[in-house]
Image (tube, rainbow, N blue to C red; front, top):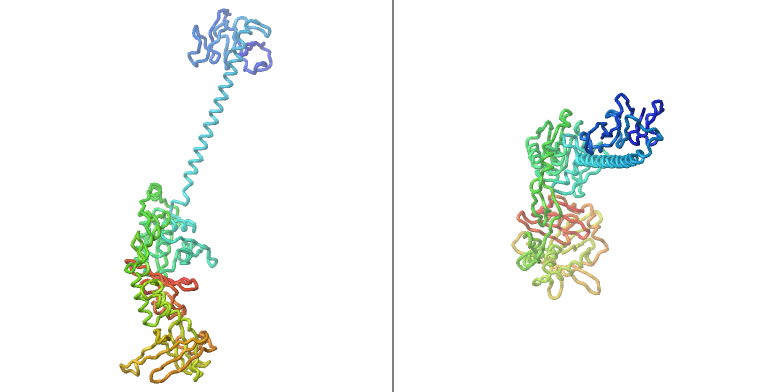
Length: 558
């Protein structure tokens, strides 16, 4: 016979099927090897063990059920709340009273077991989702390191990121179409050199930046240090700086199997980095811990520098900028925060203006008088200079048509026998303007024929009814009258025999050489004085600038 352990239904031996057609439970075979026993027994529906008393199985905690028959009448019990009978098991139409009391218990137990299993499945799924989330979080964390941490040939993006993490101008790279894996290097949008990435396996250089040969702290240093740290991440900032300094001194260094060489020419320093194949991929874990554990040691921002880490050189934020206090009679414009100065005190500016005025450099004098406009008689000087500048132009002798004078910003150039092919002589002298009996006059004093006697040459600037003219008083030679010519200043400038031609300003020129260049004198001068000397910015009307340090041109912006 077969019995359903859940609902207690019995089926004959020739029943076709292994599961109860009512509830789907697996049928158990009922044995009849022992004599019938009608006394009730307490049986565990899960493990099949029989107990004389108690309510729960001592082996697995399942609630015991009551049944009659032999103690071993039921085997292979898998479901709770089964109904067993060894001696006289009920047929399909068996004891109605027994079914009415036991059957509902089996159904209630089955529902509880199903709910318990569903809860377990949901719990397992929930824990699985948490495990997957933690797994992906770990993978994401491990992959958050942007660049490899071993010795390798870096990408241009690595070098750019590293260069911009260091203290210095903003670095950008643009592809060089002339060479493979070659990039132009720009600092603050100014091109300073080129980087070759394919050079490690070729005869080309690995990295070169045009720079001054005697300036190890220039743009080259920022880019070279970035390349060294990118190739071998075990090099921290100070390590890379020290290595660069050594290789510049010794021309060749090796570290961790990587070879560094430098070549110095007249106008550039070339750094080459060679990484042998057997060295590529070598561990650089030394930098992993240092980078992950590094804590910035910030130095507060200043007027000219952002907040900066004293160890790695990283920066944050912007410089504070100067907090200027207006210039006084005795003090130049001064920063109340750092003490830097700009320009001159009004007294110094006034004296500078008089000095240039006395030398006939009217444009330069005008700049200094303008910065001290309300001081003493600066405004009188400015007015006088403005009147002279209005006479700029070319004038021809009324009596001698080949005799010209050119008046340009207070400088008079006298041309003898000027014609289209050139002129016999041309002399330029500075003339100091002043008023004489209400007339505007330019005076030039020169030593007569090598003697100690000085003769004044005076040029009276006259304007009547809007017509300008110049009348000269040439001492021993008498006077001449000049009237405006139809020639222009450009014609005189382009004359092939004019000596000498002016040149464009260039780095290394002195202040006087710049004034005599094609740019001439600036429209404004901004000066900053620090412990290192005087830095000047010469401003021209066409938004061009020239920068001088201690009187020498260091930079030109056109």
